[in-house]
Length: 302
Image 1 (spheres, one colour):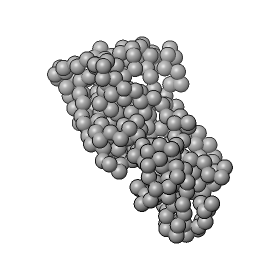
Image 2 (cartoon, helix red, strand yellow):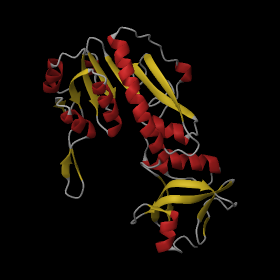
Image 3 (cartoon, one colour):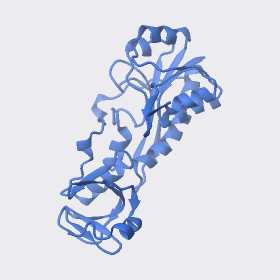
Image 4 (tube, rainbow, N blue to C red):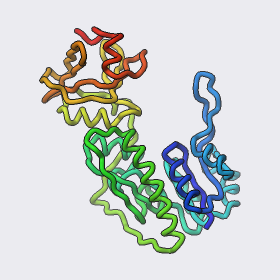
């Protein structure tokens, strides 16, 4: 069975490695073009490309997925099956090319959290469980028939970054399991129920702004749901403050009011307060509270 793998970030690397480790024949990888990064704007390859090159797998990096030259090259690999993990939306002439179809690994228990940011929204909404879904692609995004789901807990204090890292490994093994199911023709398809659908849209800057007038639980979940990327934030005296970790405060303050003590910075919410534990003030690096107060004591005193 000849497989083409489509993916770009670190999350997808674990899945590619799992397919290779389990002995599947990955004949080509499709990923994003190299991008300039750092102060020197040096062209940097995506993580999936580095993984593919390590294993001697041919890499395609199309700018446009409908480019006739790319389509011709993709077809030349005569893949039986394609897997997509953390890649962009595919045109039909790409996902409909292999004889066994194209399958996607999605970071939620579909049909819950269809969309670009399923892990973020699950944590922001205070969910205590999430998981991964492997499904067969069709026209509408994240709507295809399900062949495999795996659940995993979300711990009370976990950030999105921590859930992401655990899910990356669970998803990788699930993808290898799905590949075996497809290879052995042991797939049972489950249609997604439209009455169970919820959405996980892309995160924008306005999504990340903290509203201290909300209850403590909602603000706390939002902060851990956006940590460590892109980061929840508030504005203090014209400077953006990104907040990555908090704990429940011990006193009730007016929403948005900041209280700085010798070892703590507390901010009020509608029904309590949160104590900042890790954050980043604009123009400074990310710091934990003790380190910040050693060099910046008094910044939040009003």
